[in-house]
Length: 57
Image (cartoon, rainbow, N blue to C red):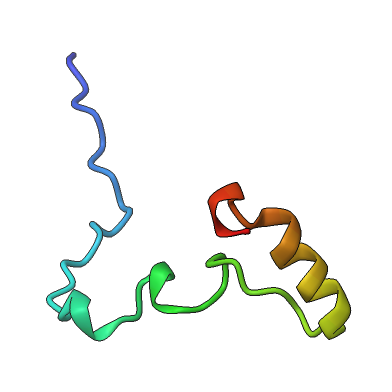
């Protein structure tokens, strides 16, 4: 006697027809674009001067 495998009872994933442009992308936020948490202005000036290219002296 040959026994056929029992069909899976798990539901198939549903198709989603939402507009993907309605959802914000990860690069739509300021996170990760170099913004620093609130700091003091002296530290920001020091960072600016440290990272300034030599031709901007």
